[in-house]
Amino acid sequence: MTHDMDLNEAATRLESHIRDWRAEGLQVSDGLWAADVTALEVRITSPAWAGQLVVQLYGAGRAHVFLLVKAGFVQERHRVSSLDAWSALLTESVARASRVRLVQARLLTSTCTTGWLDWIHGELWLLPEGLLRIRSGFMTTVANSYSSGSGPTARDPYRLIAHDPATVLAAHPTNKLIPFAEMATARLHGGVTTSGLEVVMTDGTRHKLLWASWDPARRLLRERLLPLLGARLTH
Image 1 (tube, rainbow, N blue to C red):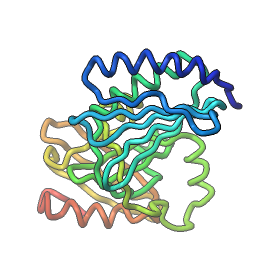
Image 2 (cartoon, rainbow, N blue to C red):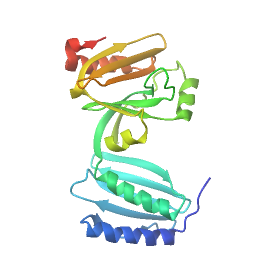
Image 3 (cartoon, rainbow, N blue to C red):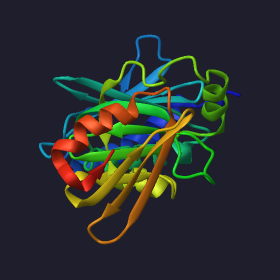
């Protein structure tokens, strides 16, 4: 389903945001129109940000949000159903840009759950300072189930990602950020169909992660955790 947007009205809303952002000291372009006048764009920068924020709106109600850096870019796609939703996207994008840190991360698996009672898959990422689990959703779980046993789901593993822990953790209670520095002990285990990691943090918090055994997550985690934890890692 598409939502036709009045781009002229959207441009008026954008101008209001531009005035506010400039008053806050951000460096903001004017509203920029595509040559065929089917899209609207704004570019925003701040010395405190990881890169330049670009927000684009198309007449069909599609919006693209980019964070551009020297090493590349990260992109998000959104559906915008109203002018209020457009304003909310602009506000949230700028707020997130101030929090985001771009990191080179490795995707370990896209079949990760947080226990036997959690059957919705998620992505498990290896970050420089810890592990990040992000819930994917029902359709991804179904797709992974149909590809069961066909090979690792962590294809094209290295990626530049926009790391925003506050947003990730607030998005769903099964999302997790597990810092290496706060791990007390960990246990890796493997089975015919399912492998997993159990972690006890220095404050006593426990985390459990499970994934399909055909993914390389167990081997990659052992390689990363063993030098960090030594005898505190059971594998």
